[in-house]
Amino acid sequence: MSSRLYIRYKETIASALKDQLGYTNIMQVPRVEKVVLNVGFGRHAKEEKYIDSVERTLTLITGQKPVRNKSTKSISNFKIREGMVIGASVTLRGQRMYEFLDRLISLTLPRVRDFRGLNPNSFDARGNYTLGFKEHLSFPEITGADMGEVIHGLEITVCSNAKNKKEGNMLLSALGFPFRKK
Image (cartoon, rainbow, N blue to C red; front, side):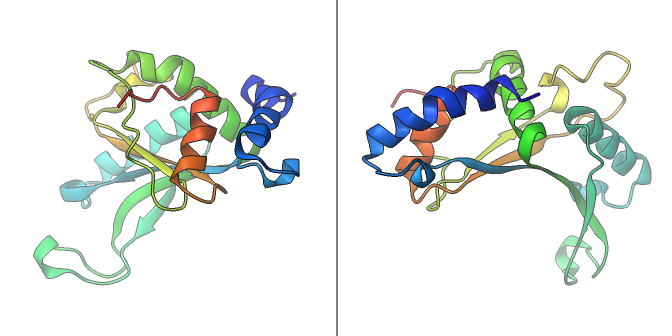
């Protein structure tokens, strides 16, 4: 069973983007490749309770166990040693990715406090989009018992095979991302 966002992309969005961008083949149309959720531990990198709480939250939100990211070199100013756990991330692809994006667009973003739309300038040169949340409580998967004692932010990167910012913006706008008007 496919996600409703994926079905909408295949049936309507891809052909509309093909016409808008002037492509001759449907395979040239940009598509979402993966979604990466990332949490940096910062000053809490040595607190195992905090790390476990963040991993539990990411598992609830995505349905996948996060990977612990380790530092590649020591930085004395930040009290980081080589091989120390400094963050956790989850990479979503395929059906889970489309289901997550559908929940993000229709449930999570409307729940964000004082939400006025996503920043359209957060695209990189390759058409990938990154957005950040100051607190993880906006996600509907986090209920009263799961809120716990730790509130943390997280970063979501939507990676596409778009060639530039314009194509990436057109793709995500067509998928339903609520961008601010300039």
